[in-house]
Length: 209
Image (cartoon, rainbow, N blue to C red):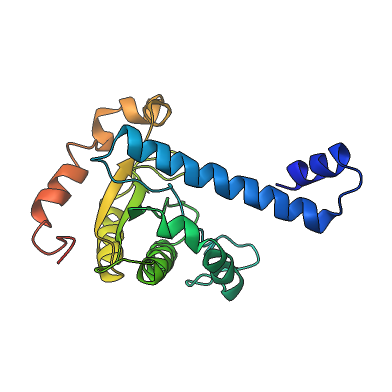
């Protein structure tokens, strides 16, 4: 963002940084709104939204430290882009986990981000009932690319449900599987870990109820 704003001031030397910022934000908003509009025209029966929004930055060791909840500053920023959530059919927060966090910290990360997604979902215009929240979860830890443990699977699903997620979207890529760790038969695969969890805990962890 800073680079684009600086580029605007180079191309338009007479413009101040405040005006360049406003121009950048207006252009970005138009692009994102028009993208949703085009998507609906092309796939009118689908439900659309933007991945990872709203942001939270909790439990990241940065300015928000080890706080479970999103900071007031981040919440204000999310309030400023309510137009994005008003234009979305579904809210898609991301709760990818890191192995360097403790198990309880991983649960805190999930609860804080899903809670913020529900907060903005409740504020959306013309949303009765509120827009659904579908939470992205990666099946590996993002810092080690090792498969989530069974306990983290169960705790993650429970944390999502307790804070109001309507469902889960599992995400991954071929890169996640392209390691020796995933070639070992004793490591526990999707068939051996996530599928049994989904089966055995479907009654107690059923979303949307």
